[in-house]
Amino acid sequence: MKFFTDIQIGKSSEPIEHSEQILMLGSCFAENMEAKFANGGFRVCCNPFGTLYNPMSIAACLQSLLDGKHFSAEDLRFSGGLYHSMLHHGKFSSADAEDCLGMVNESIDKGRMFLLEADRLILTWGTAWVYEMEGQIVGNCHKLPASCFLRRRLAIEEIIRTYSILFQHPLMRQKKVLITISPIRHIKDGLHENQLSKATLLLAAEQLVQQENWTYFPAYELMLDELRDYRFYAADMVHPSPVAIDYVWERFAQTQLSPNAQLAVKECEPYFLSLAHRPLHPDSTVYQQFIKQMQDRKQALSVKYPYLHFEEK
Picture 1 (tube, rainbow, N blue to C red):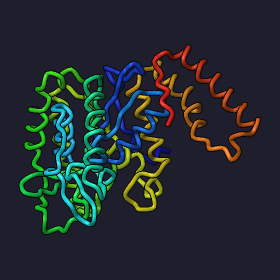
Picture 2: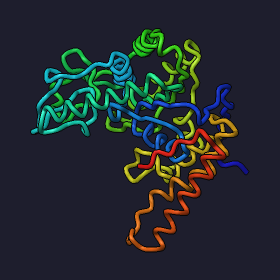
Picture 3: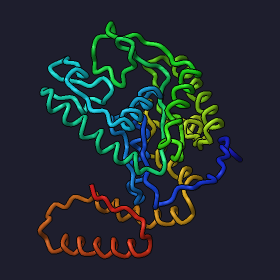
Picture 4: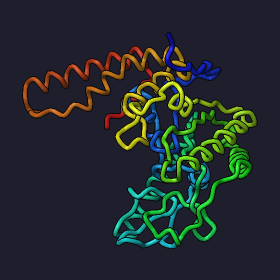
C-alpha cells in the first residue's frame, strides 16, 4: 500500500560540487538549507541582508551587492528607539545610527566579495505579498504602523521583468541559479491569500526557469504532498519541523548534489555535528583527547576530499 504521492525529481544536469561557492538568498527556509550545506562541508554564504521573503527584496539585495552600494544615514528610519534599514532584517537595527550603518555596510562588502566569486545562487522565494513605503518595496516593516505602508501582491510579469533585467548583468549571466519556493506558510496573509501568493511565485519561477535556463527544486511541493500532515510542521503550524527539513534536504542531496559530493556529505556531517558539542569541562583530559580526535578526522577528510570547507562556527 502507498499512503502518499511520490514527487518525481529529476537529477540535476549540473550537479553541485564541493569546489563551488554558493550564495543563498531568501526566507528562513533558505537558512535551514544553509545549515545543511555548511554541515556538509560546502563554502556557502546566506542572506547578507538578513532573511528576505519576497522576490523583489531579494532582487534589490542582489543589485545592491553588484553595485557595492553603501548605505548612509538618509537610508535609515528611526522607530521604537532603534535605527533600521528598510531593506534589512532587524538583526542589523541598533540604537546607534553609526552602529547600524557599520553592520549594514560591512555585511554588504562581505556579501559582494562572496557574490563576485560565487559559482551558484540558490534563491528561495517565500511570498508575493509586499509592503511599499514611499513607492519602494521594503524587506522588513520593523513593526512600523500599517498606515506607513501600501500592501499589494506582486504581478507575475513584474517578477519576471525584474529578474530578466537583473540577470542581463555580465557577472550574473555566469552564475548557475537554482530556485525554490519556500514551504513556509504565510498564514497572516490569510490561507487563501497565501495560496494565491504561492501560485504567483510558482508561475513566475516556471517562466524564469525556461527563459534563463535555471534549475527548479520542488521544496514547496514536497511539503504539500509527500509530507502532507501537520506532524511535519513546527508547533506554530507554519514552519517545517526539523524532521521535514531533514527530509527535504535528503531529497535535495539525492537529486542536486554530485555522487562524489553526496559521499563527502555523509562522511563529514558527523564531524561538523560533533563540533557543536559544548563541553562541561574543557580543561579535562577527556576533552583534550576529543580535540585531538577531531583534528585527526579533519586531516583525514581533507586528504580524501580536498575541496571540503572547514569553517568552524
